[in-house]
Length: 99
Length: 212
Image 1 (cartoon, rainbow over the protein chains, first blue to last red):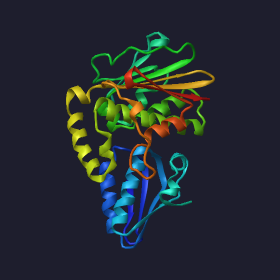
Image 2: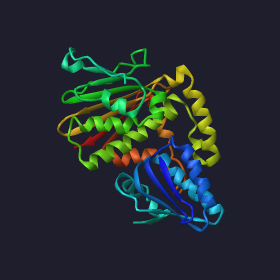
Image 3: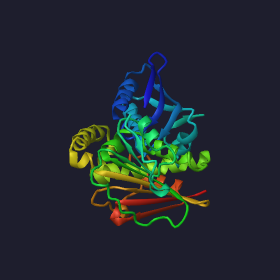
């Protein structure tokens, strides 16, 4: 998984594949979420090609970490396989998902 | 790049070796007309026994080490290789990739590496798991243990079988995820994206069927 971070805009763009093996970028992602200036942090997943159950789990862990510092994670523009995985696991009930 | 194809072999026995270096060299090693690809670090033949050979149709097999199964995009590259041999709709490609990825990671983490699934439930657990995983992957016996993927297909069906070299895994004991729990969705994803899921050999083998 690759990340592009917009610190002033409080947005993180993910690309590539997000699976169990992506611990290191995930830890960096959590650090960036906790350092974001606003209370809403947008995760742009429009360029994320693939996610597995472990990737979904890590997004939930990121959400829980954000909650501890009173921040909300917003998942923006899922597509393709990622959108299908969000639908199957009813992710829109667990996150604010923007189309 | 270390890729070789035995062009003189019988059409049913075309084999190649993968050097384990990258997804690109794996893609080359899986190029048509190869039917069986084996990572060079596998020295014991990789549990060559198949549970049953397909009665008809065609097939592709890939044998990799646990280390490579963890570090490379094995499923994506394998499904790309399949798509060069049979037409896959985007829907079917998503279903096969999503389900096979879950089965492969189960085989790696719970089969060959014997990692406690509970570690995935917290950030601290994930960090602890990573250290355990790296130590096990560096062990020749565990990191070099075989993961095998087989695909067989007919006009009506695609069947993907994933085998590990572990002691087996009790899928009947797998609990569904809590609604917002960080782990436990793998089995649900297997079942939703596949038309049939069969667990064989005490949990070391998972067979996924997809209607075309």
